[in-house]
Amino acid sequence: MQIQLEDQTFTLSVQYSKRKKISLQIDGAGRITVKAPKGTTEEVILSAVQGHSGWITEKLREQAAARQVPKAKEYQEEGSFLYLGKEFPLHELITTGERDAEALKAELKKFYFNSLKKIVNERMPQYQNQLKVKPKSFEIVESRTKWGSCSSDKKLTFNYRLAMAPPEVIDYVIIHELCHLLHMNHDRSFWRRLGSVMPDYKRQEEFLARFGQFMTL
Image 1 (cartoon, rainbow, N blue to C red):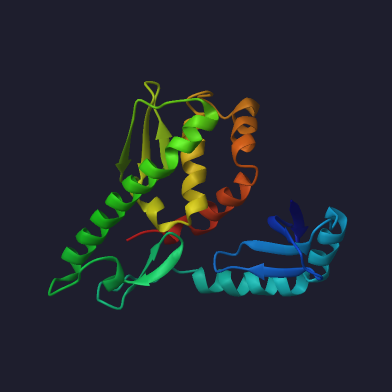
Image 2: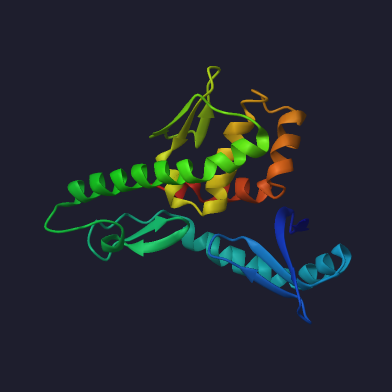
């Protein structure tokens, strides 16, 4: 579900449950979640969100201002780093010990590489089954411009920095590249197939567009 607020289009994630009122949440990534009673119509939900447009836009402005300049990374035990969409102190991700910043950075990069490889190994089979495709191989790589790729010989690559993203964003990139095994370009058939597996894929695209620059070492 999408809504336009102040000339910007936002994708809403709607969760229905046994509740009496509609509530709104904006997470640290700027994604809007609407929790609504079962049976609530789209019209009522959009009206409720529109009624809180002032609060929503102000909250998003505050988040954008805080993210405007990527903070320099602090390679020390209490330095904060992203993993699966959440921030962790460095010592919870890797063993720090008596090492300098460059050694810690190298160890953290290795952690991301290994973690993403394990995640892709665990999550890709279910989407292969849904799409009825099988890549020849996949590799975790370092890239400044691409989150993933699919070659003509069915080899997939995934950017190690995806380990910093929420699981659903990782899933999106996996599905995206698997869909290229069926459609090598981004034609309508490609997007229809992707949407059949992940209907809210635009939400994940928005995340990468907004926050990809902060997913770095």
